[in-house]
Length: 158
Image (cartoon, rainbow, N blue to C red; front, side):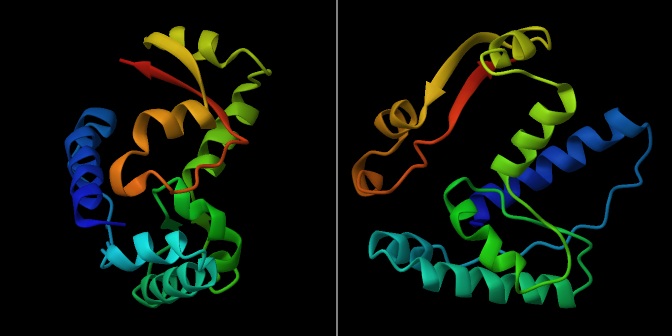
């Protein structure tokens, strides 16, 4: 959503594409960077309706520009993905949906995600609860931000 993250994602795609596909047929990418401050202020004020409205407007603009799908690459904004999806006809992907899809498609059973990641070259794998995530990363101006504590995820280092 912010310029910093868009740069990282774009660089990752353009740097790994030739390695993965053996050519330079990069995918066409439409990006939309928002003024991020409202997306900090609105959740802090419990105005998720404004978050959903703002992201719906962005999604409609991306769809009008020709996007085949939309990625909301942030965990917090997944809380309004259903509302945003209702404003467009193209599919919207968010991190929890992608992770859940991998878990289902790979047949990973509860309690086995560490084994799954370790088998794919990750080291220092450990379970991380929503509370762990909040304690570690939500500091300073983000200390009051919500984190979905319903998720139990694993982290790992390649």
